[in-house]
Amino acid sequence: MNQIVLERTMAAQPSLAAAGAVLTIDLGAVRENYRRLQARLGPARAAGVVKADGYGLGAVRVARALMAEGCDSFFVAHASEGVELRAGLGKGPSIYVLNGLPPGAEAEAAAAALVPVLNSAGQLAAWRETAQRLMRKLPAAVQVDSGMSRLGMAPAEVEAVAADPNAFDGIELKLVMSHLACADEPQNPANEAQRLAFEALRAKLPAAPAALANSSGIFLGAAYHYDLARPGAALYGVNPTPGHENPMRPVVRLEAKVIQTRQLDQGAGVGYGHTYSVTGKLRAATISLGYADGWHRRGAAAAFLDGVRLPFIGRVSMDSIIIDISDLPEGRVREGDLVELIGASQGVDDVAALTGTIGYEVLTSLGHRFHRRYLE
Image 1 (cartoon, rainbow, N blue to C red):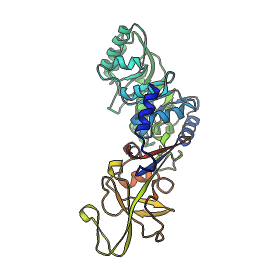
Image 2 (image 1 turned 180 degrees about the horizontal axis):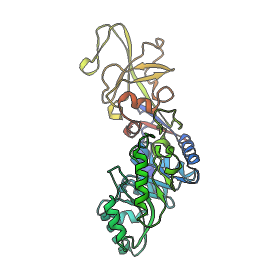
Image 3 (image 1 turned 180 degrees about the vertical axis):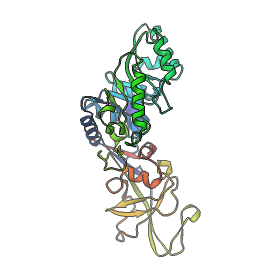
Image 4 (image 1 turned 120 degrees about the vertical axis):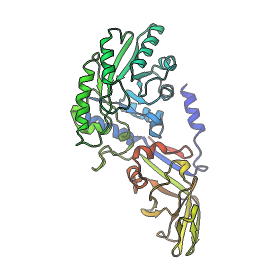
């Protein structure tokens, strides 16, 4: 199974020469970010959230790097992601499925030794029946809704489950968890309200380790740490403390190749719809990156070369973007050169601010046409 996953990954990887852009992923930085979060957690343990293919960076590669730091618990969103991660990691680590299991997926999840996060009494009943059918105990987590109104058992449902003496027959309850809605806003009273609601709800269920904090939740203090925290975006360099200096190391660098350069005269229209018109002589370059690669069309943005900002002009196309290179010495930019879109001059959160989104979306939107280079 491991070989199948690796072969599929290799088959999807364009060569450096053929690719239009290069995505560099620093696994050493991922490991350092994990160490920093674990140090802040003290006796609590940090898991690794690797859903959405490790936030677009490669779930198996990221998880293996985290395992080298002692991480033994991982979270994905879908059962299909869990099955693939198990194939890539082998036996050993716990793999939790945050969305629970869709009806009919129980047998496959049990075969892959996944730990479903049960979000309803119906999911609990289906997993209990699977355990009875297989005649062995199956691990599970239970999520309670402490106030986000997204996933998890509502208070009335928790009461009903707690009143059923057979509710957890055949089930090894490994974790009781919930999720914070406003953890990136430390002063928001919703955080403490959710923590208190979580305390009350988990007290009604069988005793088990507890988990509440996401990346930003880790920075709310020890009261939110419990036994296990679930950092995701912070591992990948997204700032978990908006408005303050980023305590995480950057993980990704995105560079696009120059396809063509040209001299534009006054009055020349640029790109679809001629939304940009040249007001004087201008030197431009077209780079091999576009919205098909996950770069958002909206917002002002730029590339960088030698620390010089090269603003986008005209609209972002599906496969290309036109940039103004007038501030660079003539002849500095040639076909095949790389310009930086994410990196030292412009981080993930900077790109998010420029395009009107969040760092999470920037990372998970990154496409699969890049040549991916992993730094161990």
